[in-house]
Length: 102
Image 1 (cartoon, rainbow, N blue to C red):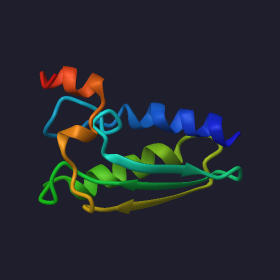
Image 2 (image 1 turned 135 degrees about the vertical axis):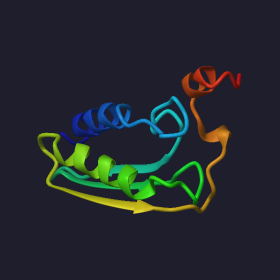
Image 3 (image 1 turned 90 degrees about the vertical axis):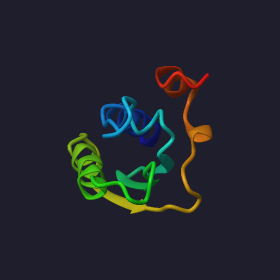
């Protein structure tokens, strides 16, 4: 169950776009950790492309709200961190192709 729920969460994360880049937050590598328990508790550690992101609060709220809407999710614990700082090396090949960085 936890693996299936984790897959559904990843699909939802891929619908959340970074406001400054035309790529979703999952492919950008902004999700540092994603853990899901068998009883539906989700723990996420994420970052932003910059600590000065003007939409930091709304982006975090969007992630939480979308994950709470997934059937089987009982609770979401989201931690925002800037350690280590994000850089383009964390982005997937898909994201780097989108950004013309390959």
